[in-house]
Image 1 (cartoon, rainbow, N blue to C red):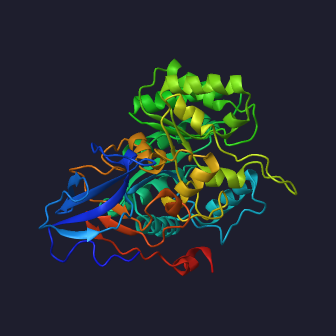
Image 2 (image 1 turned 90 degrees about the vertical axis):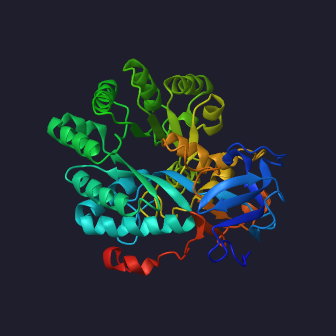
Image 3 (image 1 turned 60 degrees about the horizontal axis):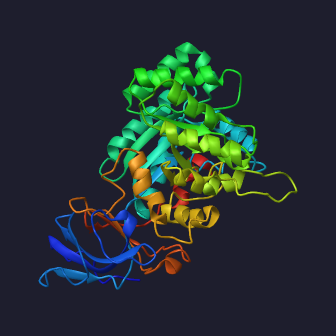
Length: 437
């Protein structure tokens, strides 16, 4: 769909009329819904949403752009990414598509290539892609082995400032929790996280010291006022129960910061009673869960000459039904952990609907890339259409779910503060100087 105009030249106030909105992402607007979609006119004044009205109720003298029932979404929140790893596939691909193959390929690439200039070039490319697709909020995990933690967090802090008016950025330190035994390294890492306004992260693995490792991590987070975002049970091994251990540690330490767990794949491999007990503990501990359906389907249950037997994702519906805050996100992009992707939440949403069966009904599915991740990231002012909020919107020609989910929506229009942005995606050739042709 090609719109003749969105914001008329020099018009301080205009209306997006005859719009279709996902009701779950609209604040304080009540109208008859069909499959969770409502009709509305959106009034924009000086870049701010000044009213959301029933169709036809906007003053007739306002300039209008008739969307002809096309969908309007808020800009997206992508709450689990790896901007520092992005786009290294051309120079260091995963040799066999396995998790261990990814670990080794990233290790080799990091040790050989990750200078500040290299990380900055690839991160900026990723941010330009995400911005063009309509994302306004991103959390990235940063590989934080010494001395990489200082390089990546410094680059991140610079880019956060440069991009602050386009994409709000958050960063999490990603490191093997076994490394906390190096007390000098861990103290320096915590200082860097605190000084750069980041979050405590880590990769949990089943081992005899897991409980004490978690206690150390949560104490450090509490002492420094840090929230926590962990990589958890990214395996098909049903005996991996670090999610349960994390929930117990949150309760045992009475940790009152925010805790997020990503992946949690093994939960779906456990028997019903075991999984149910863990889900109940997660809900009691107030832990949020983010599923990464594209990456987990790519990596999990991959064995030579054998078709995968499961989808690789966590018990998303069961967690949500228990009252756990849940969302989905991009995860890796063109690196050894996921060979594909473009930080496009529309693609993530479309694939999540298929992989996680978020349809039948689709009434509230839109929350998983809008309101839910924004809330989990502590930004309830984002990821929703609300009077008084900036007119950061994504306009689609699709009018209903079957249209939206059947095409990539590459004709979308993105508004930031009511103005149409240039949606040109960066050319991969720009990365040839760092990752090769």
